[in-house]
Length: 476
Image (cartoon, rainbow, N blue to C red):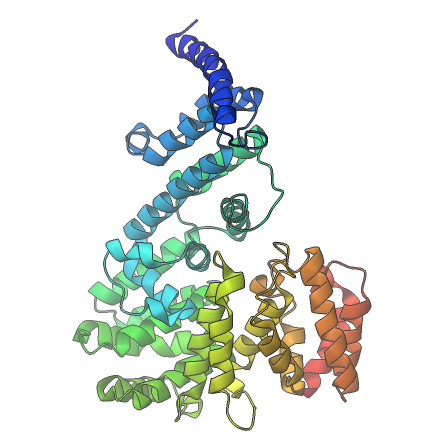
């Protein structure tokens, strides 16, 4: 019998000996005990099984894993909800370290695409400003975590947020839940490494920043970019644009971007090109002459002047939508969405028509917030904001409805959509849109969603829906 086995046995005895008097002490104080402290057997299960997991962590990383110590302390005390919090803190700390060692500047550029409140972040200390959900989203887009890992961490983050008193809940955490989440956090955060695409992009950005790229290498680099996932290509375009319009940019970087920008622009979607073009109007309205002129030069360079927005309303709407979506995906969203919804209502043009360059973001964000996350004792929505959402949805025109139908495979839209409340609310929305829509092809697709027995997240994969969507896209 080794020393660790003896220590574990002593610990189990100590937990049992401590639990009875501590429970009695709480009872004497008139405090609740039932359902607060996890059963002793559950605690022992974690303690007996955790050694092999912890030993997977390199020794140098174990020495600084403070939150894992707090995790185990919470387990021993029977506070499994606290243990989840500490495990999540260790996960976020590890992701921060991976990002900093990978490419912090690029990470901040990606975060800026998610929410403009992250603009101008530069230092390692400022990484704590990024919300957990946005951190996961940016890490996924950069290739630091896969789609599968994003879903795993999203669920653990959900349990961290909602197994506490943040919302009324009936969630129970078992020993095997904790062990499974610990295994995932060690594998995908503490011991994780970026994927091959992320490493390629890191090297490309390093070369753009440090070396003068010879013309003979451009075609090779363009082919490598073509093989990246579309989300990486479009984040790269935003990063190049941000670097190009920086007044402090060096001549070497400027020359390299001029050489490579057209490749990246041509591979990007129409929506992304409009989003870049909107920045011109934003700089113009804010009086940032230097960046406005550089934005114009960039658009000229890539033959993108047709995407230039002169009045910047699209950019302002995009920023407010990003703040609303970020709030929706954060704790206490039921109380914080309304101010952003109200601001959107005040920003709308008198015509009520949403600029074409921002239609997809508009429809996606409003539809997600109206459907809700299915949590809590309410309808899973911010009740103070829902009247704004109903108003916005009522004004969806044919182009907006077509955008919604094309978003049925969007990961953000699908995030909570298969839960009972969001499914019901989403179908109510589609039914209302169908009833006031005059276009037969749009109605047919909406009615299919309303009447389908498939989970909403699977509808876009069905042959029938693909056929209906093709007919819609021939018109819009």
